[in-house]
Length: 410
Ligand code: GLY
Image 1 (tube, rainbow, N blue to C red):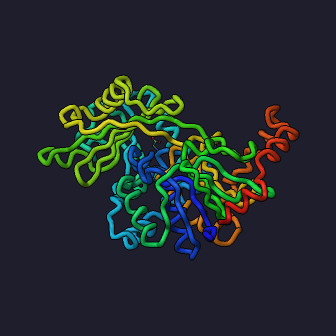
Image 2: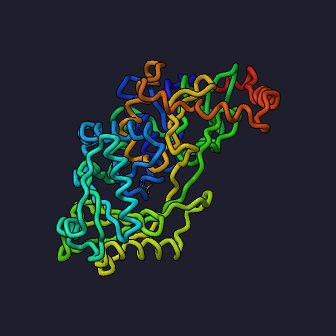
Image 3: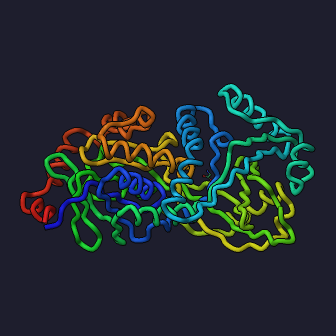
């Protein structure tokens, strides 16, 4: 007889793994399901911790969570490095956001006013001051914002460290995809794996990034409203002879798109990122690479000298309001940690803390309340395709029979 675990986490990306690790540290028995843990968006992401430079109008609530996670990062990384024995590539280097023409300059000035009104630290620099700070910048740079609090982490190292920390904390891994959530007596009870096995748990966490809406068996009104938003990214290498090429993250808005250059201590230079609504497509396209190189070249002309070592594409888990879904759902036993969109790496630290608290105590910390998955519920319940009758019929059809429940427990 197999004892149900306390928690099953569906998805072994940074969010799933940090949830598993922190929950295990609280004494919970945790299992993670993923055919290729750590191989998703973390392999593509640049790892900017850009709470201030990526501030958007209307996202003040998200800003608070982003800032909290940014502040938590140093101690989070210290704990994780201690637990895993691995370096996470956290670098306190700051960010410079620059303007290439008069329109960009006006836009950046507005952002600065907004940042200042929110009490955030950012200082305005002239073009000359920007170039003094980063001599590789294009001579035409018109001005910029120096944000000393927006740092970076290496997501590939981060996810590797999380995998190791999970292992040390006793988290069990199943290298297989989840296919279905089994619901019985109005509660999520178990997960059906692609290989046909059924694993039961007291709580099931859906943390499968942009694929979190793909599992069968869930009542429609608890399926997370996530969608994939494609990002193409390049990796270049700065030979020793060219170092230091950039000393901090440099970014700009060029022709309406974001371009950023993130220099790692090991000489890697990450250039990102496109933002494309293309469904599940992760093809690297000539157009995507061209646009990134063109925009990055406008910003830092010298990049054309550097070896291009990798091109890749990943999927951000977008949500309707660009903020994550963290916490219990209307289906008891089902908890969400998904929809982190552009802030998955930044929010890893705080998401781990919040999820561990929720899973261990059953209470939702105040900080997580604005990100409750139910905030999208009202709109969906009034939508024609989720008429109460249809939902009720569907639920009944998906309830487990008594025999199936026995299988789940055995
Ligand atoms: N936060 C960077 C990106 O999503 O491209």
